[in-house]
Image (cartoon, rainbow, N blue to C red; front, side):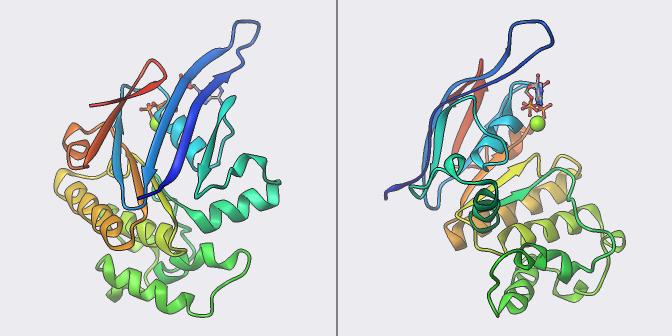
Length: 225
Ligand SMILES: Nc1ncnc2c1ncn2[C@@H]1O[C@H](COP(=O)(O)OP(=O)(O)OP(=O)(O)O)[C@@H](O)[C@H]1O
Ligand SMILES: [Mg+2]
């Protein structure tokens, strides 16, 4: 299968006041095909979130490049890079980041309100909410849901555009073990059903081991485990 996501020699440094730059990523190279599912582990502060943000075009690398289906988002204008993210990348964070004033259904539909929209967005949102087991909670507000349910809504929202890439940063970090297992099951099910590339950053060795490929970020580079 042709590689869909290619990261070549990614480096990332941050300037420090008056000092030498803080080097976080030091030559990350990664090739993933449609349907791949990987986890990335590593101690706190090693740059896992930084790497995820670069793969999702939220943050530019200092050097190196990323292509998704042959497109490099970092050469696009701000407007085009936003459209690229909206179309091609789904994000799930540790904190679900749902809008409290919107219903479950509205939250899932938010990404479709930007740019050109498909006419059947609402039926796709309902289908996704059915898939994550929440079709009976469409009109509820996030405050009426449990932590695991909120995270399931955020997974449905991340998948609404059928992205090529689904990036999850500590998606089960706030959940108990049983709920974390359910959320992981759901992510893997989405990956299998849609062929979306799944990249999950986690501190949990148990969660990481459920993925076909596990990488560790060590001294700014990815090592296959
Ligand atoms: N905007 C920034 N400016 C300066 N330093 C930054 C910036 N963003 C992140 N860093 C630094 O980069 C390093 C890596 O941060 P990152 O958030 O990627 O780590 P992480 O592996 O995700 O950690 P954790 O497991 O705690 O979430 C940290 O030392 C952090 O302080
Ligand atoms: Mg992090």
